[in-house]
Figure 1 (cartoon, rainbow, N blue to C red):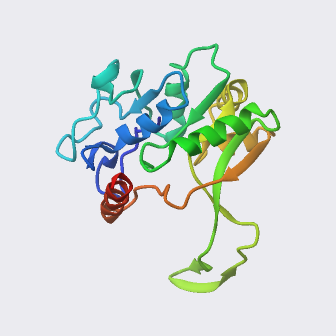
Figure 2 (cartoon, rainbow, N blue to C red):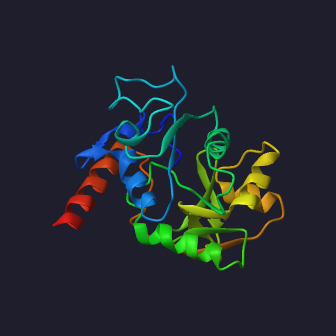
Length: 223
């Protein structure tokens, strides 16, 4: 569970802000726990978290209630890929499927976690990612001006959770590469990545108003 980002576009560490009565990251930990034998929560490295923004992050080494329900807490790195590698180091060596999820997607459902895990277990690909079709018109902007449209045919937006055969994910990270998601590292290594249908409600908290929308959806789901 990757919760080590700085939240620059949001204006702070959104992953620990309160959301419908619980920290944002705890919603993702709870959903992941429905399919996982354990959850490793990757948090900002000590000294990089601004306690003035949101609730304090769990400390590396915490577990149980002090870890928002995760099995253990580890410190992340300066990039997303480095944070994932820090989490991988804490995953038991006998794990056969590893799921990577961004804690800033608190509306990912247990069903979506189950879908990506089951697809990996089917054995047809090294990794599985959830995707949703791109529905908006896309434009290429250069120098503040629109210079033409981008064909949407075959374009999809990628979400997490993403599930992988453990050996494939470790091998893809072994070279220390960087990518905006783990599937990109597998693709760069020539490994296969399949897709399942994502969920439009599984959006990433990017702006402050996204937190309000997420809370509305969670409260509606409870009623």
